[in-house]
Image (spheres, rainbow over the protein chains, first blue to last red):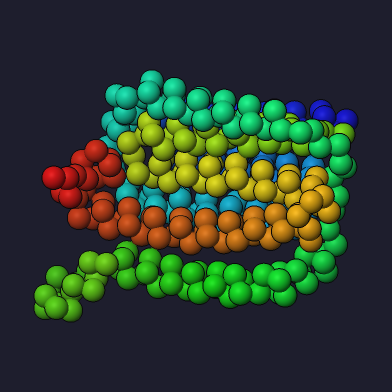
Length: 172
Length: 106
């Protein structure tokens, strides 16, 4: 039963990922990415990581895909269908296949784990996050703040009338 | 019960597909989407290890899940910044084709 669920989830995840790298249409690529991310959320559920699955759906499905679609809309141009893949794509395929092969072989040859998947209590997770991982947690909030301000400054519409020294900060 | 190996192989395959996207695509938006795929592959591996290896050796207290939370946080920040840069690039150069963004090329 679990194996059947895993196979369904894996088909969604891998199929969505293949759609992202295969389609020519950027909007379709974003929607394929959503499919793949929801598949990954399903994998988290199979691993009893309910909190992570919820975060995945909220942040990826709710925020990141929206940002992607906004970016596609704002840079909407007739050039998207014309941007083809690299001429070296067979080389890229070879590299990617080799890396996947090496990683897969490493996992395959590793000593087998016979443990059952376990689910943490939410309280356990929260206690660890706010004691053992308190410093990275604070740094993460700083990273988000800096990224937010940086994104606003970089993407801000530039005023053509501003003097050179004032407009230099808008260049990012 | 699904063995840990299956989740790890899923992560490896997803990472390879993302790497192919980063290397082969020329539209900046699609490259960022492929990077998201790679980050997700890492997350699947982290969470699988956290669930299966809890209490074995040096793994404890579901550190993998906590690290996955940080990965998701950084991914969100990265997407915001990346698309700000892409917007600026599009406004200045009129294209999102990374092959044509070559003014720093010597």
